[in-house]
Structures are given as C-alpha cells and as structure tokens.
Length: 544
Image (cartoon, rainbow, N blue to C red; front, side, top):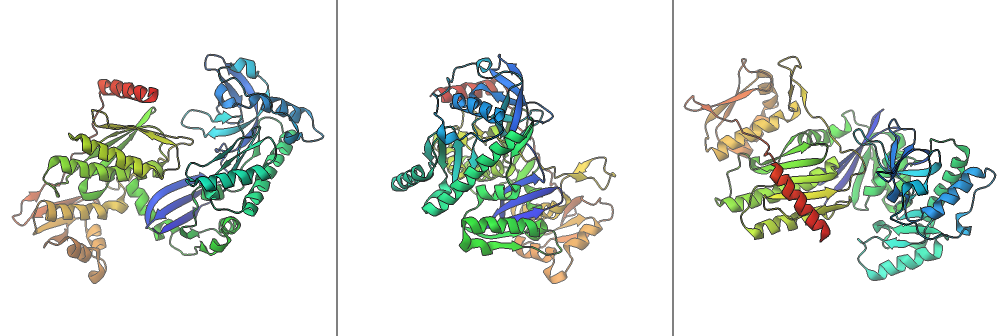
C-alpha cells in the first residue's frame, strides 16, 4: 500500500492529508497560531466550584471557562498540589521533583470542595478542545508526548502499548526505561518504540524532561491565566502521530514547514529524510493530487460509494446518525438478503473511513439495511471491528440490535471536521445552494452507467447545458465523452440544450420518451421506542 502525506500550507491554515493508494484516508486542519489545543499546558486560576457536578470552572483565558472534574485531578493530586504551590511561591529556584516523596494516591470518591478552592492557581493541560458552546476540558495529570515515549510527572508507573505483541520486547523496553528515567516520573512506551535502541529513547527522554523544566520555569514568571507550554509546530505534531516508515512521500508547499518536517524525520528516521519534498507547482497542491475532488465527494450529508449505494450522515448535539441506503443498486445477486449483506459490508468500509476522515466522536448510531440471518449480522459486526482496529482513537462497538442499529462510541478530543461542500446556485443568483459543481461530471457518468447497465437502454441522448457539453467533449480523442463511451458501452449521445440551467440534464430514449432519473433519498427516522431500547442495550452491555 502506497502511503503519502500532502501538506497544504496557507496563510491562516495548515491542512494535512493522508493518502493510501491515492485515496484520502485522513484530513487534519489546523489554524496557524491556534490556542487551546490538546496537550497545551496553562497556568490557570480556579474561578468557581460546582459541588453538584463535583467539578470546577477554571479560567485559562478562553471566552468560556474551562471545565475541571474531580476525577480529572488524577490519582497523584496529593503530590502534585504541594509541588505546584511551592513552585509558584518560590521564585528563586525550581523545586526538584525527583527529590520529593510521593504521597498516597488521592481518593477517587472525594469531593472537589476538599481538593481545591476559588482563586487557587493550578497547572492544567487541555484534555479536550472547545467544542460547540463548551469551553475546554482540563486535567492536572500533566504529560509530555514524544514519538516513542509519553512522560508523566508525579508517578512511577511504566506502561507499554498493547499493540506491541512480543512479551520479550515489552520486557526489554520496560527494563530499559527503568534504567534511564528519573525518579517520580512515569512513562508510557508507545508502539513506535518497538525495536528502538537505548540511545534513541534516551535522547527523547532528555527532550521531554527539558520540556518539563522549561514549563516550570515559565510558570514561575507568569501570571494566570497564561500559556506555558505548546508544541513547536502543529504540523510536526500531526506528523508525529501518523508518521510511519512506510511513507513513500511527504510533499509540502511551504519551504519553512518542509524544513521543520525534514528535521523531524531526520531525527527519528535519518535514512528516510529524502522522502520530504518541496512542491513548487503553479497548480494548488490539493488539486494536483486529487484531494480537492475527494474532499468535495467525501464530506457533506450524502456520501455515495459502489453501485449507486450511499450513506447519509446527520449530526445532532447528542450523537451522529448514519443511514445506509442501497440507492438504485440492482445488479448482483438476486437474493435480497445477500444483496443487503454486500451493501452493508461496503457501507462499513466507507463508515470506518468517514469516522477517521471527519474525526467524528461521541456516540455514532448506524442504521444498516435489515438482515434476517444472525450469521450475516455477526459477519457485519466482525467486519466493522476489523476495520476499526487500525483507528488510533479509542472506541467501542456493540453488535447490531434487533432493529438493525449498530452503536459505536469513539473518543472525542476536538470538534468533528465539518466541511461545507455546497455552493451558491448560479441559476438563482445564490439564493439557494447546490452540490459541488466539481462533481457534476461524476454525477453524469453515474447516470449514464445507470441507464446503460441498470435500465438496459443502449441508444439514448443525454441533454446538458452548452457549457457542460463543451467541457465534456473537450480534447476530442482524449475527451471525457470518448472515455465514457469506452468504459460504459452503449450508443448514447451527449448534446447541448440551451433551455437547461448549468447543472441541469435530461435523458431521452430512442423512442423520444424521457428516461426517469430521479432517486428518493430520505433518512429513516428513529422512534422514541428504538432510542429507549438502544439505551437499555447500552446499559446492559456496560454492566456486562
């Protein structure tokens, strides 16, 4: 599988697209200079205690007060609090964490009013970015993330990624980290540390410790609320979490960002530094690699996939709802049950991709096409679990309910990526919106394929606006029109009709009768009873 990373740097935003065999699998957009991102550490001030929620509202400088729950204080808060108090009172030197005695773990059933008080200053880390009308969510369990390790002050625990399967390698890494880590620091060993030598891990350990010491020094000189630690580059941060040695190319259209990425790759994989390339073409980089077209076809309410089938994605405040439809698909096995299974399996492929692509989190409810056979429902459940196994976000999947609904929970730490792909209508002066005009030729090709191979009509005429007809026939031998005739077959014609609007079309058979091309695309509604049954099933699964 060919993996490529395409980085589009614009004055206000950096977009990072991951392609696998030229197919868009992940898209991250970061505003340049963005604040309140996951991992940022702030010196903050407690503003108000909420005993009923067992939480506090904290001022980190954001428009909305941030939320800090008692459980997010962490099990080592009894050690953390006196250390931070000493740090902020003593301005002449930094307290040495390795020389203090760790206190017993904090009671999980305690109360927020016994732990902190209004006006108190704390070092807090963003655990969830601001989403919708909510402010950031905080934690006092500080951590510093590297490529191979995650460093956590105030504890001694060493954990190894569960994705490292070899027990011998796990033992080797734990012993190695035990020998190099300072006292009173915990470490999570990441999957990418597998097979790495002590020198590489030691270098990263020193880097993470320097982040810790620099943060303490900055906190002493700051007044709450203040940012005291953030990653050097959001692009490098995004790269750190998705980079693998399998990347064949990392292509960037900005010289400075390319330099930062090359330095990072040279640090962690010197033999692969030549994969970072600077793009200097005149064509926009996302257009050059076909990403713009994929974005327009992959985002929005309706997403089509094979043979006319499609899914509809709806967002609410509480959850995401995905509806699977077979559309005008009629080819394949005549058995309805087998057709339903095939469409559901292909829909699962697209849904797993959409969850990653849009970074959808929280509760996701998928309404698959009903299947009567239990073994087919189990096949679909197993297939979805396999597809989601490569998803880096924590998730949980429940088997299909008796209503054919699959419930998925997925870790949400930042707002879902929601890109509006609609455009102002050129026919009515922008009073309404239309689907992306870039994809209009794809729609026409699908209609032609439907008429020829689904309806069985070989001779007919498709009428389009004169501008569209000129575009389709541009180039003669290499034109889109000639290519479609080779790929689809049939003896159809495409002609101009000046009475049609830009994105209108109509098909007329050889008998001069119009061919019906409309499709019904509606979202199935979930009844209150279905929602109640879903909640019951979720609670039962949680208890078990």
